[in-house]
Structures are given as C-alpha cells and as structure tokens.
Length: 96
Image (cartoon, rainbow, N blue to C red; front, side):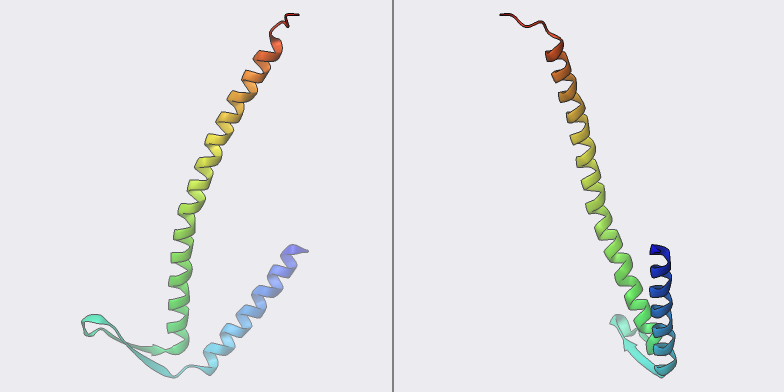
C-alpha cells in the first residue's frame, strides 16, 4: 500500500514537473561572477538549482547522522559493560 502511495505521488510530481517545463521553455539569462553568463530554459535552471540544494542538504544531514550513529555505538558499548557489571554483582553471594 505504501509503495502505491509513493508511486502515485511520484507520478503527480512528474506530471507537474513536465507541464511546468512545457509551459516555461523561454530562455533566461543567468549572470554570475567572472563574467560567466548562462542562457537556457527556466525549467532547466530551476531543476539544477533544486538539485544542488538537495545534494547540499543531504551532505549536511549526513554529518549529523554519522555523529548520531557514533554516539549510539558508544552508548551501546557502555550499556553492555553496565549489564555485565550487573550480572557480576548478581552472581556474588550475599552476606547477611
């Protein structure tokens, strides 16, 4: 069911993107530093800018994910150590 919903959402986004590209095919001029000028369709420019944003967002969030996984590994090691200590303490005979 989940795959069907994702497939439908993907098709909707695809139809919107294709219709946007068809309606906005006029060329735009982008001027950047060092006299760099690019001329191309508006839809291509938006696609490139959104792709760069997605890539940068993924790279920035990856560092956070790696840091969190490292912290999780340390916490698991500490938990195992504490569980072993508890098991050792339970094995000791009690003095009364």
